[in-house]
Every structure is written in C-alpha cells, then in structure tokens.
Length: 194
Length: 213
Image (cartoon, rainbow over all chains, first blue to last red; front, side, top):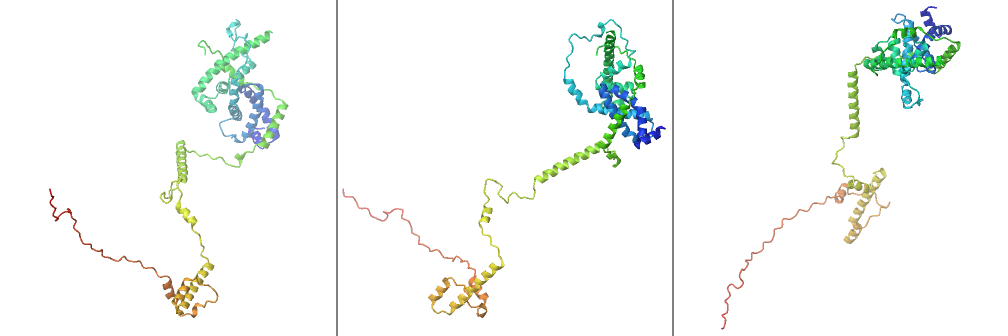
C-alpha cells in the first residue's frame, strides 16, 4: 500500500491500515520516547499517548508539503513529548525537595580507579541510561539539538526560552552526560566483574 | 563545572546510534494501543471539525491600546453609576443627624382624597346654609335671627330645595366668602405736647431772707 493510500485509509479509521501504520512507525517512536523520558514506565505511557496523538494529527498531513511522512510523524511525536514534559514540570519541583539518603562509604571520584574508561565506545543501553539520568530540561535540549537535529532557535521556540539559555543548558547536559556515562560504565564493569 | 573538563563524547556516533535504533513490537502493544484510541474517541470530541479556526493577525500594540481604552471606559462608567449628578445638594437636609421637618409635617397632614361622594356632601352643606339664611330673613325678631345664624343648621330632608328660592347663589356666595379687607392704619396725628421749659435753678427769683445774726 502506498503512503498516501495508507494515510487516507488511516484517516477513514480503517483497522488494517491503522495496524500497518502502527507496525511501521511505532518501534521508532517508542525508542524516541525512551530517550526523552526518565524511565521505561514513563516511556511506555508517552509512546502510547504520543502515537495516538499522531493518529489524530494525520489529517493535517499534506503530501505537497516539504515534510515526508517520516519527518511529519517524528515531528508531531516529539512536539507531543515536549508538551507532556512541560505539563509534568511541577512533579520535578516536588521531587527536588526530597533528599535522597546515600551510602556514606560510596564515592563518586572517577579517578580513583586506575582503569581507563573509554567513553567513545558506549553501548546503547549505557547511553540510554545516561541520557535518562539527565535533568528534564537538559535531556530535552540534548535530544533535540544533538540527536534530532533541531536548531537552537527551533528548540528555544519549543521550550519557551531564549537561545542563550538553550546553549548553557546544552553545555550542562554534555558535561552531565559524560559524567553519567562514566559512572554507568564503571557500574557495568563492576557488575560484570562480580 | 570544573575547568579541567574535556568533552570526549563523539556526538555523531551517539546520533547515528540513537536514530537508527528502534524497539521490538509485540501484539500486546497493538491491543493496548487500540484500547487507548477507542477510549480516547469516546471521550474526546473534536470541535475543530465543526468550527473553522479564526486567525486574526492584529498587532500587539493595537490590542494593548484597545484593552487600555476598554479598561478606562469601564472604570469611568463604574464611577458614573456611583455618582448621581442630578441631585441638588441644597434641597434636602444633608446632615444625616438632623431630622427633616418638612417630611414630618407632610406626614402629620391628613390626606383627603377628593372623591365624588365628598364633593356631593360639601355641595349639599353649602345649599343647606343658604336656605337657613333665607328663612332667617323673614324673621322680625333680631334675637331670633342671631340665634339661627349662630346655631348650626340641621341638614334635614325638610329643607326646601334651592330652586324655589329667589335669591341667587352668587349673592350668597358673596356674603359667605367675602374677603376680609385689610384695615388700613389711619393716619392719626400725634398730639403735640407743650414744651415745658425746664428750670435749672429752683431758687431763681426768690429773695433769700437775711439771717438775723
């Protein structure tokens, strides 16, 4: 089935076309949801709701426009995620007031180990875990600018901030991501050794 | 952030790794998604289908200016409703602690409604008075006349009707309701009293007796 026919039948609520559309795009979208969210539970919820949102927006897609169907679906899905995270911003303010109790013997000094950490060759799981551990604003900025190729102006429009703020958030995100990757690599090495 | 920080991540590698990867699909996911879409369709009503979107490209300054005018006009209209310019302040008693005597006098005055029945009774009373006066004319005795005039007339059905009498109402009305003339003060000439010259020395003209020493 061609893309135009597929979209037309999806708009008409054809069950077969809908399932085909789901099978084509849901895998990619759920992975996008995974790197934009803080854990797998939130990513599942976002993937379902976001894909339903994309289905509703399918009638706005025009074949003559510059966007392909892949780009259109991805853009709509990301805009849904951004709005979703903006809405639940208050949850993070509440969470920031709660102080976590850590093990006092635990140390985060990365240079204590003599073992060299190669951050350039990182596995997918470690990378996803490290991105998920970022702050929501940093996670959004890093995903949009670095991975999804949005410009600084587009990102600032999405997040209702100025470009300078986006730049500084991106720098913080890069720093924290590297730290997270190092920590996660250390943990994974330790787990594999045990 | 520490100054010794060196960014060693290869972003292109991360990008390619993230963009090309996707999660595996399950049949349960499709069922879950179908369930979500069905519940959404039942609860969500899309009004945008029925109403076209209205896009008005108005400048922000114009909108602010109009909002400012609307705010000022609304505030001024609210003030005009509070202040009544028609009332004159000198008519009434403005002091709330002082009693308004005019209103109290008005309340004291009995209110008569001049109805048809009251008019008739007044007319009949005047007519009866007239008959009494006419009857009194025939009397020779002055004392009797006076008595009749002073005594209140009995308004009875035996009183003769006015049509039989010769004297006209106008004459009687004149006698009854003659306006009392104002008495002019007579120019009374004041009595001139003779001027008495006062005596300054009472012993003037008297010859004093010589003392016998």
